[in-house]
Amino acid sequence: MRRLTGFAIPSFFAILLCSISFSPVLAHLESPVDSGWAVNIPVIDGTMATGEWTDATVRDFTLEMRSRLDGALNKTLDARFHVKNNWTYIHLAVEIFNDDYEAEDFANNWNGLAVLFDDDHDGVVSAGDNGEGVTTWVGAPFYSKNDLYYTGSYWDADINAGQTNDGSLGWSHTNPIQGAIGNWTFEILIPLVGSDGDNYDFAITTLPQTVGFKIWFQEPAKGTDGVYPDEPAINKNIQEISNGATFGDLIIHPLYTLTITTTAGGITNPAPGEYQHPYGTVVDVLATPDVCYVFDYWELDTVNVGSANPISVTMDQNHTLHAVFKLIEVVGGQTIPFNVNQHATSGSVDTFACGGLLSVIISTVFVSIAYAKYGKKHPK
Image 1 (cartoon, rainbow, N blue to C red):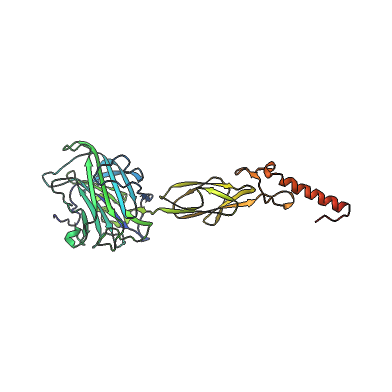
Image 2 (cartoon, rainbow, N blue to C red; image 1 turned 90 degrees about the vertical axis):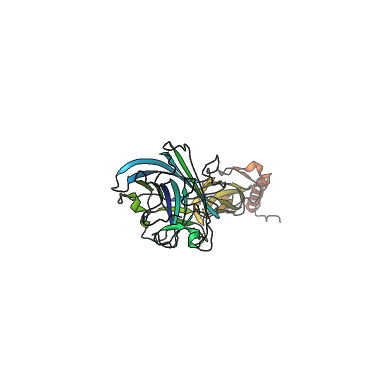
């Protein structure tokens, strides 16, 4: 195992640098990336098969490849980040487009991908932090044990530090001929649930959880590095890797529960009950009143949000949706406690569907008036 000291990261490595970030002093670059829910579980082989990542959150970004010596811009690479989780694992994929393929060179430099974590949540890489790594040289990858551990001065394999090798990795290039232009694909699977942050990269007991992330693509043979997100004030990308304040936010979401309830007098579609949805799912709910009732309004998390029907609920957290129905009122403030066909959206009433009962009520009213007019008591 070749050791890494200081910034001597193994050559041609793309680094996705992650840390659990709670400190208010950290800068949060760009908008957060909200993890999708893994309905489909991908095979971690470096090939994104059809349908494997359609349920992931996708973020397009660019990598400015800058000189290690003076920070001068060499080229810009388009890239794409995919992320999803199923609470047990987080699944990551990074694509880098239109870059040349390089296998082992004379200096034993390789292309690759690694994922690092700031386990003690302090915004800096320190002893005990963990990671994942991929190299593209299939002969004898630097990170053949794939799990990484920061000793305080260099990254080593987890098992060399007495820790647990718990991740899986894969990579591919569309044109694996030395120097040929093509697209890189890196896939990573990382356990989310563990007993501690040393034996597991993520020692997470509840979701949602926010982690800082950074993607680093390194081409040492060319003397250039690219990072995302980058800090404009730091022109040498290689200096950003140890700067915990420049992480972006990755939010690992659970499935969120929509609880639907109603008052008496109607039903909803979906029916009342509890339903789980991935983050960001928009759920349409329709209220349909029973006969003789009208839909009045919705309560979302106990707040009256109006009478739009159907209503659209965005699942960004657990939500409770309550449909409120009321009896239809007639002249004089009387209500009709029997069958009336009523249209759910317009509130119009078809009184002829009352089966004659409305006529009975009206007739009874007129009879009462007649008896009162002529001074006679209403018959019991």
